[in-house]
Length: 345
Length: 242
Image 1 (cartoon, each protein chain N blue to C red):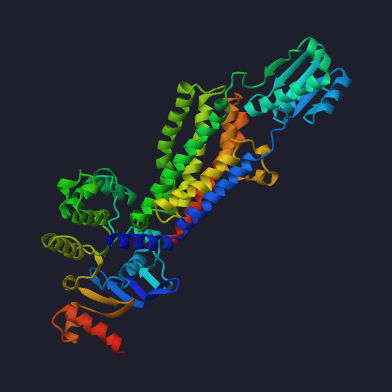
Image 2 (cartoon, rainbow over the protein chains, first blue to last red; image 1 turned 60 degrees about the vertical axis):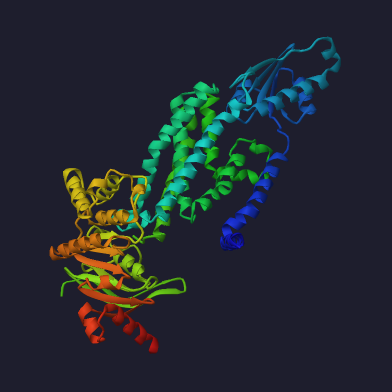
């Protein structure tokens, strides 16, 4: 009898909580759809520049595969490689073949090497039987022994910092509301922006420590590739943490309890994994690609790679850092406004 | 007329649910004003509006001749919420330090005020303990101490003596009288009829309406009742017969 009463009560509670219900049934569908869209994308198509004195050779290559474009000057090609418009440059000066890869993305590297091998084989099948033309391979960034983890690692560091700061900051701001302390604070002359700023600063201290620990662990213990300065990496992770912190506290205003806060994970955090560059955005359906622009992790992940793989410094990352700062400010402002729900002043 | 709190024709509704309807009352300086009513009568909503946390849907609330909500006025108000708004992970002392700092109390003055407020509620010996080890009554007392820290002109207490033993309740009332003698205006809500007797002025709240107000004696005499409870029944019943 008592069990029956219990079951009845739970069913009733569940039906009253429409959000949790929707989350249980709709969120898995959403995620499955996302995964499907991401992984059923096209193969990576590399962009390779051909630089050669012999125009016939470049033309031949261009005919074999769409990936090849002939460039007149190697200077322009290297500029495009630097700005990531190209994945690789192939310089043909018979009998030597020199390939320079951008190198920061292992998937792109593999695609380039495969395309080049096939193209060379199809061009002169009889010759390749006699002697294998061994192309000389150089990397602009990274190296042959760069592992996939070196590529996704910088992104994952950013992701984990974002994820945990988001959740913890969100839940603790929520607790402030559910335990009545928020109301108690609103009966004091404390201003709304002061409350938001206080939270950001208070948590900020912990996020500094967290960022430092995670970054150092990845670099010194996991031995992840680290081409740039550790200080820039800490700066970027910190900016990401601030973004997560301000977003978490903002969204906690729209959750009634801890469970509802956790429900934001598949809505806010998981999509960022797919759209912020952990997977190749170029291989996704085109209409999905612009989504990456509104994801804070896109900027964090890109800046992390700029520093850790490409050895970039302030000139390479300042725009991404500024975008993250902008996100934080925006979320904080919105949070100040959201608190109006509790007190008009 | 030193009206410290003036509530004029205030109504409050959340969506289509009317919580308070056309409430008008005045609390004078030094007075201990009691809002008496059963749970759900709208007491908490009314004091929250006076404290400046909620805004009325209709009507005006003036505290110290300034329209609420007003941030500067909030420094003059000490508010003790119905739920113990305390940080359980922190010690009693840390909680008091936090609230004192919010009101701008620093250094030696802060220590003095914390010491004073804690001794008032008999918690001096327990200040080092984390609040999650406190009993219900101790948490109530700590909440009260937090409301007293900045020596507010107006003290708004929402059900301050729930779960507090009779001896301590008496000593808290003694302290409230002392504060009111020194010039503090006190607004207190209660659903305990015999506690209402201790207030200088009473407002009886039922289903969001102020059904009667006056001193406990006046209310008893005009209904020829011997207790406040009887008077409350009289006014409550009278409204139903209408």
